[in-house]
Length: 556
Image 1 (tube, helix red, strand yellow):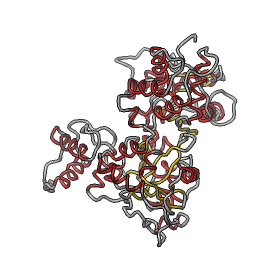
Image 2 (image 1 turned 90 degrees about the vertical axis):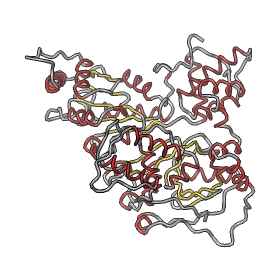
Image 3 (image 1 turned 180 degrees about the vertical axis):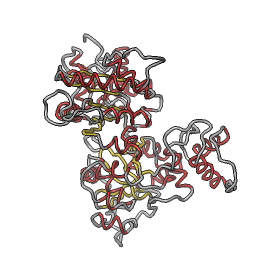
């Protein structure tokens, strides 16, 4: 080979265009070209925002580089890759990227108005010459709310015919949650195209590996056997960057061992080196290991799951009834059908997976029924998270949960499962017994053994969340206000300590309060960092009997 086939540098030559990547690139090109934002004289009004999101390592930046190569010659691009900037610093960076020279200031440093005036003049000049401008911001989940508002105001720069600036935001899934905040609704309404980039399926992972080797000059059979390719997909979870790291180290390991091809043992050893010593064990295909990893409670959970393996397959004498649902969502959705007998065989499990949607939006709407949100549950199109934001709710997603954390949280939510072809599918978790989970798929309930769930679920969970008043992300030391008062009150309620009286001094996030937060997080199985984030507030709400739907604990 002429070069390293598994470098993690975002080289467009190595871009593997899976169906998802092609769709993502098409969305970017439509947002800039199809909407009239890339060249004067095209149809449409242009302007607005184009949104591309995806998990770490799924290929967002590489797609962006490929997108830049396809932009028409009459379009000038400003690319911001470090958005942790103030409003003034962002405006300065945009002007520098567009090579805009400011007129000498009368006194002192240039102000925000100076930059905006210069940018407006530049954009008008390009429009008059039949050209256009695009601003691309990578890692956009790091943008502050006031900076996002300034970006929205930049899209107000326009003529009578069209907007002068097209803005592309590229970021991790947190960006979608950020834009779903009520205070950013005006910006969210200006998003003209959006796409979320998922991980690769098992077949696509194999094609991806072969593609990169071919680009690097390799010919002939792949230097990976079949078992190693399956193991690579499982360990890397279909994430291209993780595949690169694992394949590169595995090739090195096979060479060092004098092997002509990479085998599963080499892959497991490589995974331990690049992902940590527990990576191979935590993703073992053994149902016993999966169950143990999910439970995290040692022998007690293992015994409970052994009982699940020996569960009789006969139909119960009385048909099970669905978990209680409030009147409002039942009116908005089709009647919920009772959970059938437990699926046991691989064929039954595969049949259940085939019924699950591959788009998360239907699952969000089904979950809305559990939240008694008939207006959201009954909508068949549009982004449910945007609709939820109008009702004061946020969509929260995490990939770090386990069954014990689900039990403690006690809230229904969306599980991301792995279909037979490796693609993600979605089901709503509505019940959790000692040995089974109850999933809602469409209008039907299905019970599955936790052992079976352990082979399909990797910890991805999503739910609606009503953020406490005043919550806006990370809280700094010394923070005060109603949010901190609520935090201290909930912790006092859990500790059994008396809450501060009406005339007490306002609470502040000091070292003592952070220590109480860490103690609560440690007790709940969360990362004890002392920073109260969404999962901490969700667990606090559950522990203090807050509002919202609850998981059913009745296996029927």
